[in-house]
Image (tube, rainbow, N blue to C red; front, side):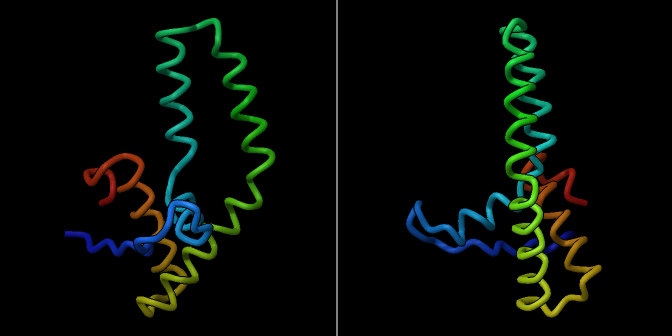
Length: 106
């Protein structure tokens, strides 16, 4: 059994720290691929615009998302006393759990 620790705390919806931690734990490529797939099934004519919008978002936010993910790893290292490698593995497990469900987190 995998032990996953949530780093988010109950906070106001506008709290940038907990929001950042939550964003760092989402695998946006999985979410975006599912969104494009659903859009293609329901409204295929909108797929090119959606793909362009996703590409723009990725381009604009890639550095910030990378920084948030590193902050998540750093926090795991500090709070759980993990090595960098173990913290990176734990972060990937968290991401899989939150994005794809518990069966993918193993």
